[in-house]
Image (cartoon, rainbow over all chains, first blue to last red; front, side, top):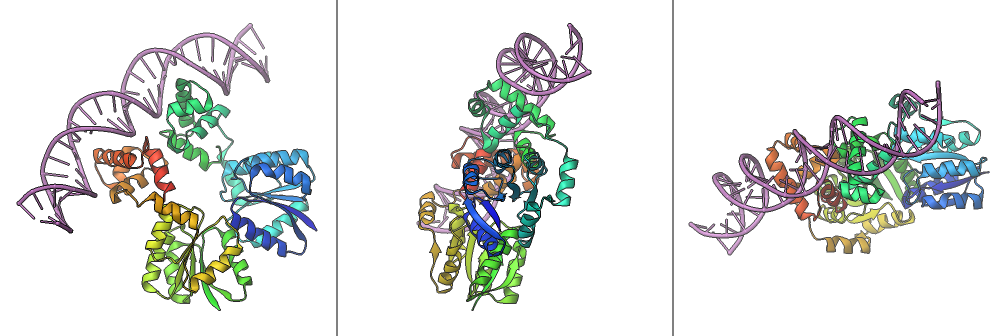
Length: 201
Length: 201
DNA sequence: CCGGGTCCGGGACAAATGTCACGGGTGGTC
DNA sequence: GACCACCCGTGACATTTGTCCCGGACCCGG
């Protein structure tokens, strides 16, 4: 019996997946979470064999939680399930020690199969996505550049960003300029868009 | 037997819902679509009793399709299922003649129940959402303001927008300024954010 | 016919933004 | 030690953006 932890914020999706996977004879859902911060505690409590994690979650990112989980429970395999097949996400998932990476397109039937393969020690990755991740190259953005860019989403002004990141407005503009240059874009919004597109956020 | 059409772009979600609803004894999925443009043709072909539509779809919006569907197949009830409980979405759904409006949070169990209630002629709307929609008031944005704002997503410059909408740059700035004023925001990005938040896009 | 609204543009101005050059600091590597 | 990358900040500059003013066009309801 495969013990599974399911982390997914959308209630309907979570419920549907839980019901579906519960129908498999060899899978048992031991925990369901809708919040990133709850993943590790729940896992330590319920000792799942596989953790199926969404990336975009309230609280903590599924990728962060994955890294933690791998460190604290090496026996628990991590399978990332996400809406967006962004190259940077895949890369980060691999670096975090995930064993598999699925996108929410593609048929449901793959899911149970992927869980079994991951538990057997295999790696499950869409080949096309893997190629895209390699060709995209690594994240060129500095930590600070990422911070500033992340704070610039939804139209914050330089002053807002400076306050949020505790930096001087002038410095913020320098970082923004650097990020714009590295992403080959023309303004901050295009830069955040490009960065998100690649999973660099 | 309730004949159901299911429109949802995310493959896994669509598959999961189809399997789930297929388990109900009185529901039969007669069509599955992942594209907005395919909704009406498929419906005319398969004559469903209820159409379960996502809003954000490739091709045509589920709301547009809903209006069309109501006009061409008055006997087919429309149930909107969406990720975002935006006030403007609900309002537009009602104007399009939808009988129900569900968000993808909330438990899966509600879904089958909602389908049956809709078919029985009831309206299914989250009361909290209905209140929000009323308190938010109607869409204050002009058609042109919406166009310009929509063209301003992902950081296009004034020149880009002007080219996309076939207007003078000066006019574009005037519309942007008007939209910023009406949304009580400070710049175009906050304006698009606010407009999207309210479902005014 | 006279408002009032939307549509479309222009001009002028202040503010915000993006760029560049420049400083100093740290830490790591060859 | 020299080099390099990143960190943080300043100042100056051109461009872009947001605002407010002003026109004229149209259509509709009173």
